[in-house]
Image 1 (cartoon, rainbow, N blue to C red):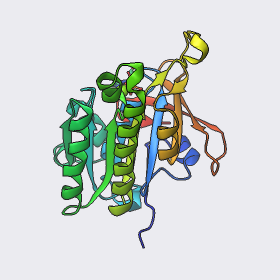
Image 2 (image 1 turned 180 degrees about the vertical axis):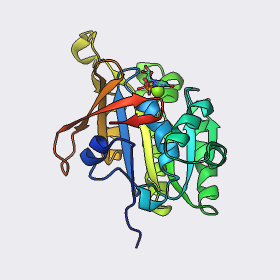
Image 3 (image 1 turned 120 degrees about the vertical axis):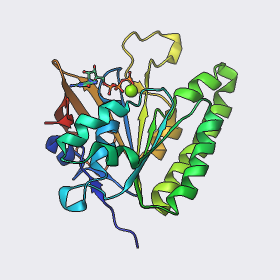
Length: 240
Ligand code: GTP
Ligand code: MG
């Protein structure tokens, strides 16, 4: 039997909200407005996952699927230094791939499963899960097909989390709800509908506070209280 490993986010408040950190054997989704810190948390987890478990890490490698071209290796350096790790070694343990279509994204996941059976991975990042689907399926008439393909990809992520005892961290976008033809100028809903809602084990909603302050709220979780955590985006990554 595999046991859950909890990986620190770098913020004690956020870890407490999550019951100890980002969990393996599960999919954690972060959604929220632009610049709310979703990608910065991904970068921080790239490093903290490699910490020993005695330091609330996962003692494992990281796979990063980037659909928006926002991964910054340079950003890893100060975060690694903050955690007292060698930046070069940390970067060597991040397997990075840029995806350009949803099919490419799916194929990358298939390739990763092979890699994960050979080497000890503890985190898979998909930033963002939905962006390419929104580009590749544009018409209203394509929505059913999009949701079907999205479901297939999410089921692949669930399998990876369970088979390799890996934490999956995926980001999502917020969209305006077009219900009733009403235009909503302040989008708040996560994209992906029920398909995404059901696949995610934990859904986190991020929003901006003052300056570098950010607020995270657990969204729709039956087993966690609907409370909030305040964290900061610092040069060394996510912190209190
Ligand atoms: P989208 O992908 O656009 O939806 O946003 P996101 O939620 O992924 O936002 P992201 O994590 O990229 O956060 C961007 C914010 O992080 C910036 O507005 C800065 O406040 C902060 N940030 C980015 N890089 C640095 C850095 O090198 N140092 C510090 N201190 N803050 C940074
Ligand atoms: Mg981002």
